[in-house]
Amino acid sequence: METMYFTFGVLTMIALIAIGVIVYGIVRVFKAEKEINRIREDIKWNYTEMNDRFKDYHQRVENVYVNSKDMSNAYTDMRIDKLEDKLSGNSKKLIKG
Image (cartoon, rainbow, N blue to C red; front, side):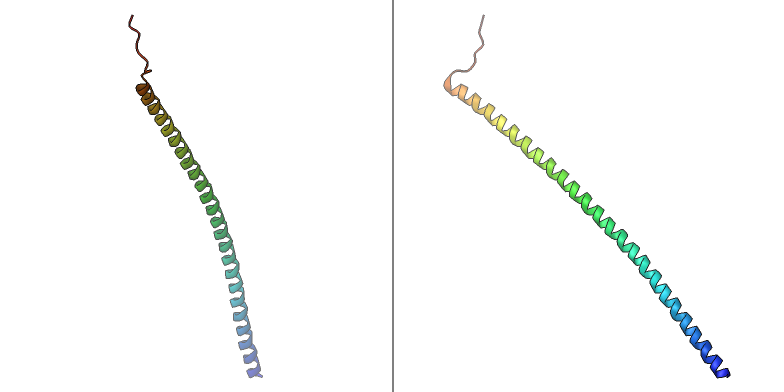
């Protein structure tokens, strides 16, 4: 009879340890799942932020390009107008009075 009680005691301890390990594993899985979801949200936020900054920088570069192109065209037109005035002899002269 004592052997049977001893065997039931050992089996009970093994079952309790197994249940404890299973519960510990489940808790670890839920914690890992929460961490994965947090990291997923961080990645999504970083992607959105990076995309917004890229659009902003692209817009700035586009504005600089357009402004520099316009300024270059205006300067070139001004210089060509001056050259035409000199070549045609129609330059504006001061009226001496």
